[in-house]
Amino acid sequence: MGAVSRTGLSSPRLDLAGAELRLLVLAERPDEYLAVDIDSGAFVRAHGATDAGSGPRHILDVIKVELATSEHATDLSQPEAVTMAGPARPARRVRRGRVKRYLRALVAPDGEPLLGFPASATPYWTLNGTRPSLALVTPSDGLTVTKRETDGTLWARFNWAGNQYHMPVDDARLSRALADSDRTRLSGRALARALGHRPHYLLVALAPPRNGHCYKTLAAVLPRQ
Image 1: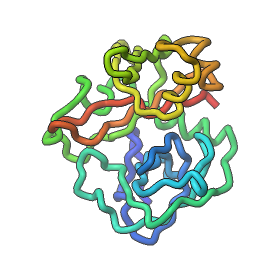
Image 2: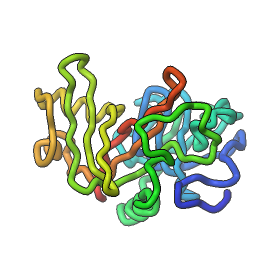
Image 3: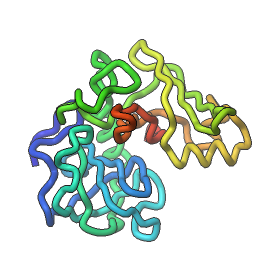
Image 4: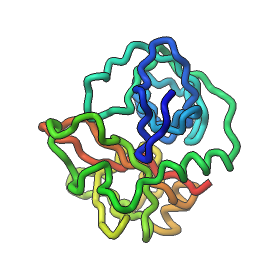
């Protein structure tokens, strides 16, 4: 496997059918894991049916996945994407100190636009596979999550690298935490209590194209470790 760049992309692309990866899970969705490859330290978007019975029980678990021929090799909006050949299997967890080093190494540099462009979305045709679709940031003054009365969607607001960001939330854990709190706005200590940890790292992901554009979303809220 190739060296890891500061953006968390690996070279060559992780698309070798039959290869096995050990992944540190940052977020779990019905059809993908957003994770870190244990061997290279690179971001990975592992697509396939996720299974609560065989997958991670909570964030920062480690899983093993076998790769199939990539179904996403031509999707230039997700250069980290791979396709799983079957369900994930639990693997032995790594020590907290090692997890901390993985996360620190993947923090996005301050001097560059988040995910390679300054706006909240970018036209799909502008993507060429060289921009990451995942980024880890540490907000400068905390995180505020609000539920919109008009449509019930969740939105996150935070400051990073001198800029304010306002983006939709695509994090099931955060959605459940807000619902269980019976509040429409969480921040500070109330947000930490609802999550069970202080927010430290935010995982920002580029969503699949919608109306020809890819939007930045908040995919996970992670502890410091």
